[in-house]
Image (tube, rainbow, N blue to C red):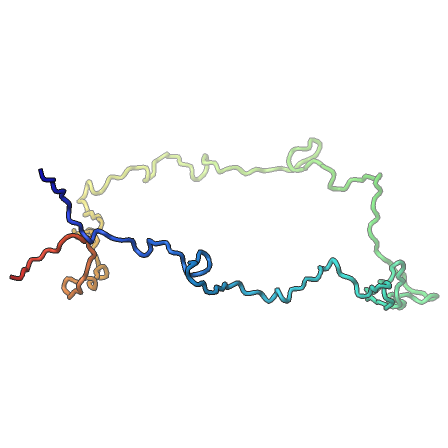
Length: 252
């Protein structure tokens, strides 16, 4: 019996793809780290930070704690005299006699000559503390107005009261009601009624209260239906690379 032939699908060459250049991990020829040892390595240089000028001018001398005065030598302090300017010393104020301008000799009467007596008004002599004499306003005497002191004659006193209607000129002896006491009848009841008017609110014409767009709400410059339009393109899906294109027009 003949051997059955094994059916195999035809191989598509486009499906077989090899690795790209980035698939191979070849050593680099740039730099000196992991350089390809089969290739010649050129000298490499590095860029460092620029040195500051202060590094050359930096003073590394000790601080002020090690300051030595220049006048001190190995033999001690030099003999150059030193001076200092201080403030003015104030005069002692133990006793300050008055000057010549403090005296007024022209106010003194010449001695041996007669002159009119001179008087001066001094302050009132204060009372002694043990003489507690009260002042005139410290006494509380009873008042003489009205009948309050039994042993003193008092003047007549009067009081003003409200006006009494009894016996006065405004007394209503008849007790008759005035015109305002009666309820007058409405003249519209017994006479012809006068026309009456009323004011109503302002009426408006019926209309649509919805908001309408104004001229500035439209953008006619964005309308391209009535104008020529440039062609536009869109990105579609990616088709398979193995599909045979459809050929409609076949040459005989």
